[in-house]
Length: 407
Figure 1 (spheres, one colour):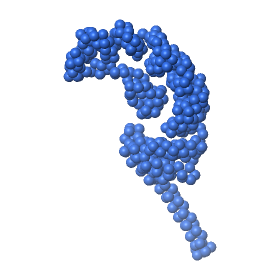
Figure 2 (cartoon, helix red, strand yellow; figure 1 turned 135 degrees about the vertical axis):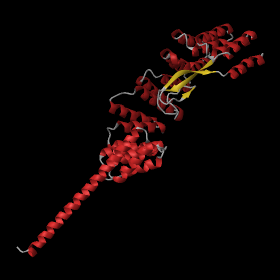
Figure 3 (tube, helix red, strand yellow; figure 1 turned 90 degrees about the vertical axis):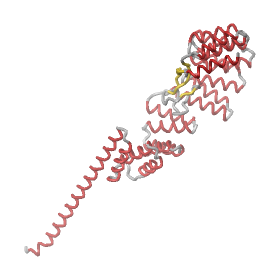
Figure 4 (tube, helix red, strand yellow; figure 1 turned 90 degrees about the horizontal axis):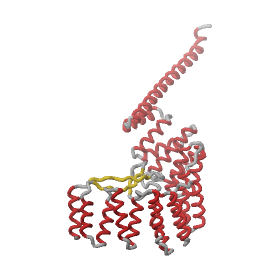
């Protein structure tokens, strides 16, 4: 065959070779780009481990620019922007990922879940609820989606849905969060009683909460409150007395309630027996000593009141409560010199003891116990602690002078 006859075949062969070379070159460039993108992504994660967030954002941004198909880099970048407070940018990134076609189920769930967290951080709770629901619809086995949705329901005060969502969490995790479920039932009951005036339904829910977690004092506390709203003082009294027997360390939360219910039944003297029940189990309970002393003071039994307040000082010599109450009794009896001596001892204390309740999760503190922390919104995290404070010399002198002026 002549050269001219072979020319068409040579041209075709050349074109095939050229296409192959271009294809290989593009594959090589793409592989290089992907390798570079992966390197940036890994460097970004490395910076994140060492809490260098600005550098992490830079590398993850670089990874997304080099490889627009790198979904993980986009999701991580959005999460970082959320942690940095750039909520709008985080939302835009996660929204754009979640609507991509042909996403794997895992990637879509991660994007929707991250989007839900963005909305929560931005206070867009309705949108957060929708995002978490969509994540659950895509993958009903992901526990964290249920947990986050349950928290959103709590924030929306949709206690019924929060309760059923927590049941789903427990089923998936093969556990039973008895205390949390009891708290949620309690909130459902209070909503029924206070908002809808359906006390019968509220009592049924509280009884269910009691069965769910018999060690939850707030259930008995609020059960008594609902009985009071019905005018059933006897049942309220029984609920609260049972709570005192079950939870003597937290009995002080019920002292005022019991005093009022006894007063309504002309049996206020019964409160004395409650204080003695608590003190029989814990003689060093300052709250019970103080309340018993107040009872004696209010009923004119000043000698017994003096005895109880003096015991408080013996139990906790750095507490201001015993000195203040004892001084009050002595002044009432006209023993001004002795009262002055008590106040001077109070003023000379090198430190004061102040009772606070701390959230074990976030450190929030208050003088009042909370079943759900107002700051981090965790349940059942408050513990009682005594904070010791040094008293400045100038402040001590001022306090020492105050009783003299009164005298």
